[in-house]
Length: 146
Image: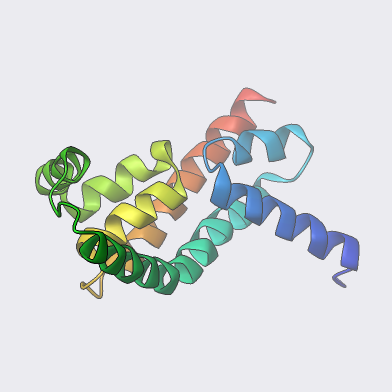
């Protein structure tokens, strides 16, 4: 099977949508007539590829933000940071990854890389859990729309 430019563009579009709006993508793709296997591949690989590209970018963003806050003399511990630390302590990496299917790939990735970026397992855990979410959401969408 030859990959035409239109098919490649369609795949990239679904993958980009999967990174931005993960929960919506499988249902939208199945409703658009994409086969469930392709939907799974597009949504899982879109989330995984987005996380791979996001990891170094998030580390640079955190360093830049920390320097800016230090220069301006702002507080290190804010109410929002305390809330994130409580979530981190309560749920851990796996918990953040699991709720990531609901809150979205970018937010889950940022929180996981902020607090668990030093772990080598952070990226594989996120990719695994988002692949499982992709399988579940694709199955639900394909059975609901049959």
